[in-house]
Length: 437
Ligand SMILES: NC(=O)c1ccc[n+]([C@@H]2O[C@H](COP(=O)([O-])OP(=O)(O)OC[C@H]3O[C@@H](n4cnc5c(N)ncnc54)[C@H](O)[C@@H]3O)[C@@H](O)[C@H]2O)c1
Image: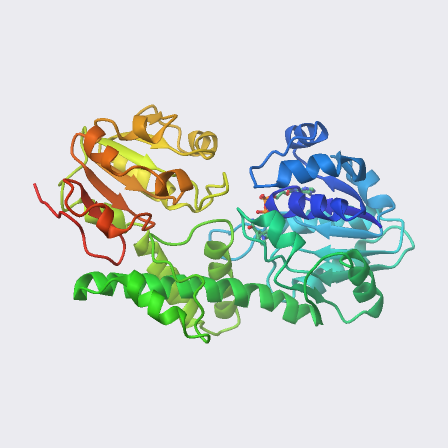
């Protein structure tokens, strides 16, 4: 089929490449000229495992362009995968989505299905359809269907090719049939529901996961106080199928482009409708304070961070991605710098983005974990990169000035630090070799 994907970010590009790998003719459209030039050379502008390889294998079915008129004119299916970032009041910014809708209305000449993959508040698909019909220039039938995306960054290609489910939100048989054809070769359960339900499935799923994380983090905080070990606790919980053993890892809170904004957007939507979604509000509050958990722990060892050498391992919101959106490092590193610390960061793929977001000459970027921790007065772990988890922990003692390791992702087993001179603090577990100045 002739498919156009508007927006080539983590969702749009992965979607476009996966559709092309299944034999569809895909035009990937973006407003960012630099990005498009990079993709035209067969290079992925984002880091996502397996994406570059699949992109290169599928290049004969892929076109990259900034020319929206050409991209929409004859498309049979148009996916909208542009961003819906958070506005200052917590609601979703739909301006990018409406810009695409406007361009489609002006230029589409073929009967087509516009598929909204971006995460949008409940009722938005209805409004987009009305908007396109009001502004439509050419005499063709344009349907709008919701098809929320559930991929996770770091495993986006696998999550798309073998999705947990494909949700098709439409009451129109034509649109449902077209989407079934689009996804014919995808190995995933497919369900067809109403458009508003599809939109709600996305928020309800993401917010449930955010809630699960915040719940475990609160349990972890309590474990520290009462002397339990959160890993043992979640091990015991996970055997219960009603709970499940996924998403039970305690840490310094969720980040990324979805959970923070989607929890706030649902909370905003509820209050806009004179309702309160208290569980989700609590998840947001818990997460905000959890992000500062390591700094609070560090204050036990240092009253302030003036002139300290601080090692930071990992700055992305999770491993497997170069994305920094809402990453705990973005809250913590500026606080350390404000306090007068010298910060040394190691991250395998996130440092270029970090430099852009937190330009500061007091940050030194390191090519190895060893370089980052040498002479450090304290080390913070914000991302559970494999290199960090596999690191020989005795090196913390050998290389740091004062070996205090505060691990926000529970990368290590506690017994790795027993009998060493390293102070090791983590989340929801006792601190090993606890010392105070
Ligand atoms: N990132 C995720 O893990 C994930 C997962 C599921 C759902 N989502 C949702 O998918 C949507 C996209 O997220 P993302 O992370 O891929 O966003 P992103 O910010 O990485 O990418 C958006 C892209 O759209 C482009 N764009 C903006 N206006 C455009 C226009 N008029 N025409 C063409 N391109 C345009 C931007 O230049 C950018 O490249 C959001 O609604 C998000 O909530 C994201």
